[in-house]
Image (cartoon, rainbow, N blue to C red):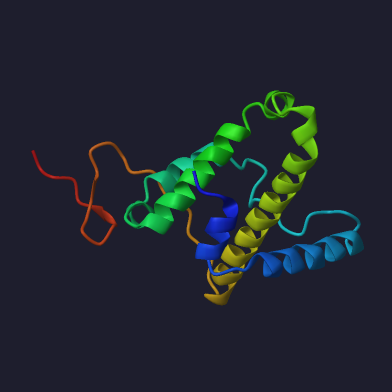
Length: 151
């Protein structure tokens, strides 16, 4: 499993840049009375569903950087299951080191999310909601849904 630092590096972000970005955002968050600046699009956000969509995307699965990102996202889904249980297994003497690493990783994830949001905004369009394919529907060579084969 690769570190988030490696993922951020592959995304073209330096750790100092990520730290500056998070500090600037923290300042902005304090000004907005502690409310997070960005949130998932709806109150019905389902991280597992989003992960499953990304795991099925051939453009992410077809290259090493994409597979690395998918593995990191999958690890996050595992971690979210029992956070308190995971913290209990960390030896007391390692808690300060773990805490620093966890904060650094969270800053890297936040920077990655901000970069993705900025890229989406630069293109001046919203990403359309993906519709699940109906059973038996095939994918064309261009990645869209193809007509159902006749029986």
